Amino acid sequence: MAHHFPPGMEQSVAALEAAIWPQLQPLGVTELRFVVLGTSARAEFYVGSRALAQSASYSTAEPRMMPRMPFTRGAPLRGGTALFEYCAGTTLGSCREVNEDAFAVFARQNALVVVDGCGGVSSGASAAWLAVAQIERVLAGESDADAGPADADVLARAVLSANTVVLHDGQQHRERRGQGATLCAVRIMPGWVAVAHVGDCRVGRHRGSEFSWLTQDHSLAAEMQKSGAPEEQIEQAQRDHSTVVTRAVGVGESLAVDVSYHPTREGDVFLLCSDGLARHVAHARVSSLIAEDSGLTARCDALLAASEAAGGWDNATVILARVLR
Picture (spheres, helix red, strand yellow):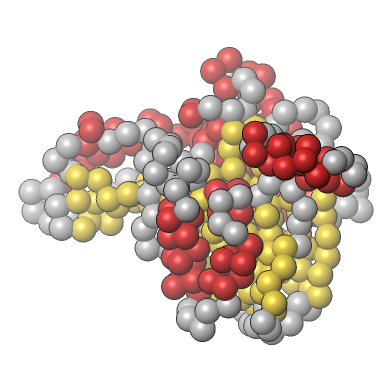
């Protein structure tokens, strides 16, 4: 990896690279780049040519003081295609040492994905990145999507393929047994959008003056609500077992992936997020922030800031995508 830095910083950044790189390779990251900011450097992680996330700014004077993969909220990543423009960002929060969320935008396939890893500090992050990498391979046609029925949406088959990869990785590596992930993914096409999700990552849509969620959590509380359980039991589940999900990628050979299709209009804004936003920031607050008359970058940053202001109890990841035509 070639980097160009101001005089005197080469050795410090090389030490920083040596500290980070071994942690990233097992997670499917293929390239590590640095952006120098005065006496510090920001690391950006890539799979192929796609930037998946960016870290905090690390002091180049103390590379060994860096905690393991400490993502924090930085300038959101921005981009676009002929069909949509997007902005994406992630925050570590205040209570976690490691960010187990992952996100990616696959511009050629008009697809976006947010993944929330679970299973512990090391295995949760591993599951998230493995899922992202496998979804990319399937969407790009680099891996056979033989999971699921042949007529299933490619997004669903990509998620099922990721399920197999994450499951087998956990079976082959004792330290990652029990790893899993929840996720949501969107594929935007002319006039419509496909939405896939597993677990409690969510997809929502802002249209005109209204915001609504397009997915329903696969969580203990949500399943109890659907089954008609008493309200007091549902409230107890929401309070005491809010992180319990009933479906996750990588925990079993079979997996049910919810897929839905929705017509789009020019100006629709789609939100993909991990539960660090959806669980801790009220629906009304999310709705008001997305509805603000500002650019996607400002709204993305505001949503992440809202998660932090709510206590920062969990990692939070946000992608906003605005339909252009």
